[in-house]
Image (cartoon, rainbow, N blue to C red; front, top):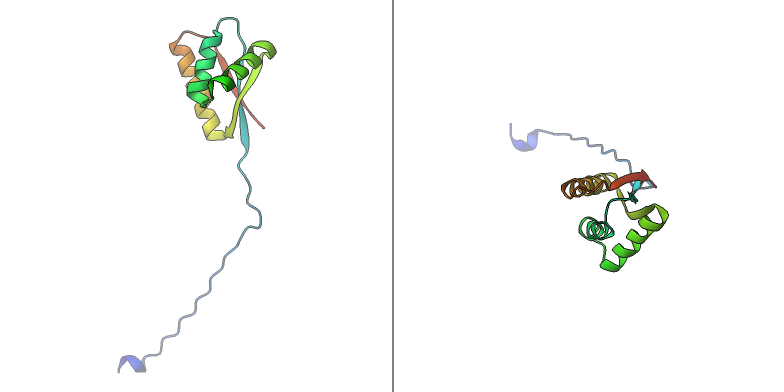
Length: 106
């Protein structure tokens, strides 16, 4: 028996589904809340360090926090937002400030 004598039959069937729409992950706003103890300078530093804001952007957000009681630091996917909130709390604790930071689904 040679190789030519052996008949091999291979049937392949490939099934694939393609989604027509790609769903984007939900986005979350990271918010800073005003308090009577955290300094404006510290808030600006946090915005620059944690949220990569320019000095001008950081000052504007800080003024929103100061005047309106709340300011939006950025909008991110859940994991990034959660990480940034954690960094803010860690920095606030290290510097003995009661700065509050939260996230909410957009």
